[in-house]
Image 1 (cartoon, rainbow, N blue to C red):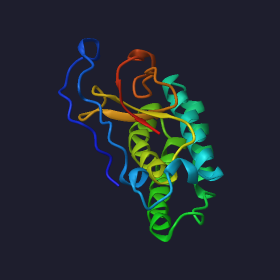
Image 2: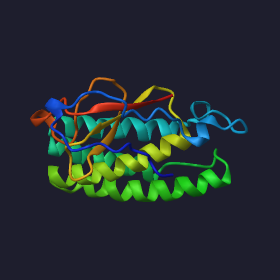
Image 3: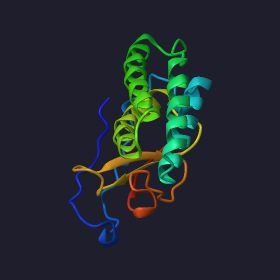
Image 4: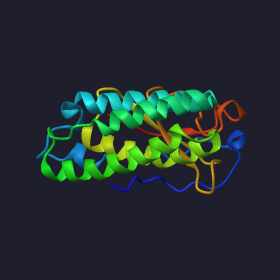
Length: 183
């Protein structure tokens, strides 16, 4: 599933204005009439993956390389033990691909410096967002976006609406905006 991010022009976060850049559409899975709502099918493994992802994000917000490496290792182990058998066969196949990719990114995060951790966190976020589209979340998640990271900006998930940027930490802690709420 491809995450849709609205196009943003390059501008400084200090000058950015909240505008009509929010993507408020829900995933096709969570709006389909013939499937259960995503939040009702989230299993314990999916909850733990999301919890470990949030711990990793918080370590990156704090610019704590060691804590991020430890959180990456924990997430890697959680992903390796993720069971998708409670999902239909199409979702199982997609989850297998997502988990494989996310596990690789978590592994890199567990053994890299902070700059490389953040690069892999960008790709990991796409995987976790795709996973949440299938597994749902019992909590409201906020997809947040910083236009200043790398060439195209960087998204991340948070359980809090308040912006705390994992790509720049205290250098640009509040750079970003909420793009959409999930659930």
